[in-house]
Length: 174
Image (cartoon, rainbow, N blue to C red; front, side, top):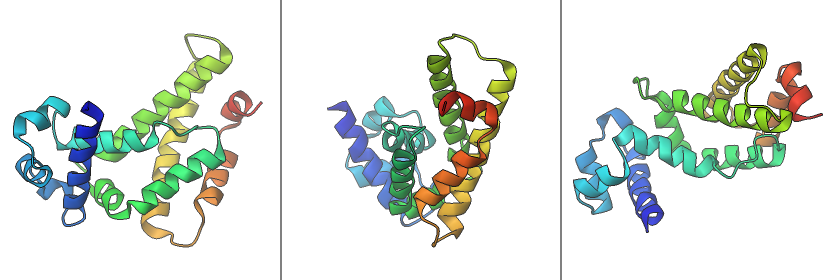
């Protein structure tokens, strides 16, 4: 039931973001669009930025980060929600989605490296490379999404994997 309510609220937010930017949307509008009370909204999300981050998280959670097919599928889902992601990427507030995405993927790649290497800690160079790679990928995803209507997602993902620092490719793609 909780996830269904979150999805209901998320769909309301997406409809609103099809009409205007995130900074112009108020929680009251989200509640009205979703036909819920403010307490219901705040039970599930701390603010509208938390909701936007959850929408991304919900779409990304099943992505296999070291599979080009899975990553391309996720990028295509982002393109299908073009206006939502366009407006989310345009937001430059302290709670901007791109910052959340970098943190999310940095954590995913870190956990995957720890799992593969069977360790609880990573060398500082590996941690730096993961963060550098994630910043670059998020930037290139934003550029692809907003400005490239030609290149297939699979091609972009393959170029990202090819551009991955060697230290990471040695871990993820032995």
